Amino acid sequence: MKYQSQAVAKPYFVAAIALFVAQVLFGLIMGIQYVVGDFLFPAIPFNVARMVHTNALIVWLLMGFMGAAYYLVPEEAERELHAPKLAIATFWIFLVAAALTVLGYLLVPYAKLAEMTGNDVLPTMGREFLEQPTITKIGIVLVALSFLYNLSMTFLKGRKTAISSVLLLGLWGLAIFFLFSFVNPDNLVRDKFYWWWVVHLWVEGVWELIMGAILAFVLIKVTGVDREVIDKWLYVIITLTLVTGIIGTGHHYYWIGTPGYWQVWGSVFSALEPIPFFAMTLFAFNMVNRRRRNHPNRAATLWALGTGVMAFLGAGVWGFLHTLSPVNYYTHGTQITPSHGHLAFYGAYAMVVLTMISYVWPKLNGREANGNRSQVLEMWGFWVMTISMTFIALFLTAAGILQVWLQRMGANPLPFMEVQEQLALFYWLRVIAGVAFFAGLLAYITSFFKGVEGSPEYRPLAQEASA
Image (cartoon, rainbow, N blue to C red):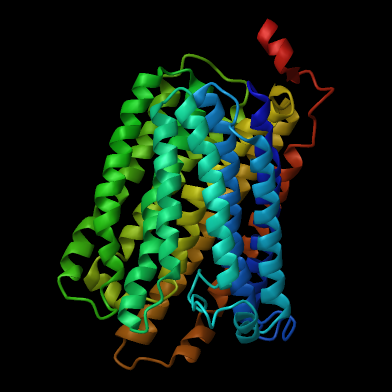
């Protein structure tokens, strides 16, 4: 850690991992409720578990992005963070708001929560992924403005690099597109049209810029490859991302009442969206193969390589499986969608945050890398989580294919609930894979406390510098 203010990243990473644990636990609850309908009912109904699961996903990834940015930008700018105390205050405000929102979901009926939090004055609630109370959304905007002010001032007063520029472009885009969560037209077609401007242009647009910048930063550190080489790759990736991602939003407009030409534009450009993810895979492996140093943090290198591969598989390949309009006509709203969603979110965004934490956490604690025992356990966590998530995607894909055939393509289509009964085997297998994933996550967390000091492999930063 070169600058003292980089330490503000630590509480963000701790909160991110805690929320990740909560997200996985509520995902397991939902998985069980698919096959045991009254599990934990009425304490935690399925709709509440789903809100907590998806909202925890968004918040922990945002926490992770913020922690990564607070570490990355000062190092790239070669100066201390503009206002470290503001960053800490922003963290506590964001954490308390997130906690109160989750408690509201769990303890208060959603209609009552909407009434209590001013939704009648400015209606924004009741939409998937954007269930947060209006007052929480306003708080998120204020937190984002504080965060971006802090980073932008640091950036403007220091060295400007391609990595920090791309990161800030992505973060500003994230904040700007979130403003469309306040656009809630009475017309359902227009509502869904603008809703995708938040959801799609986050995960298939500006979040990819954030991912690319973080991955580039870690690869520079662990490989020693010239910055100019990595910068060229980064510019190619973000160009492909923006060209395909923005127009590719059209693959969400197929069946919501928008003009028919979106079936052509959406199909063509969303079919091109795997290209930037494939470029990220080539980027990661190319940089590692050309490395000029063998960094002691082997676990972080593994996470960086895994991010490129899994992002391509989850967001690229699984996204392409049902993105063309003639295919999407049958698959839309089936288990094919969550199979893609789970693998894409994990491969692209969860893994890049875990990559950054893997690289940064030892440095925040005065070490170049954790000891060998710790890294071996962390790499076990990597493989268990990654393989488990792959099986979750495969089980849901199989369930989705069977669902399409029985419910939408057979000679005598079956009712929805009757089809769900026939998918129970895949849902049980999904639960088993989810438990394995949770075990892998616990291994990842434990690795940061196991075998850190006292092992032959442990070398503090001061010792590394003198070596």
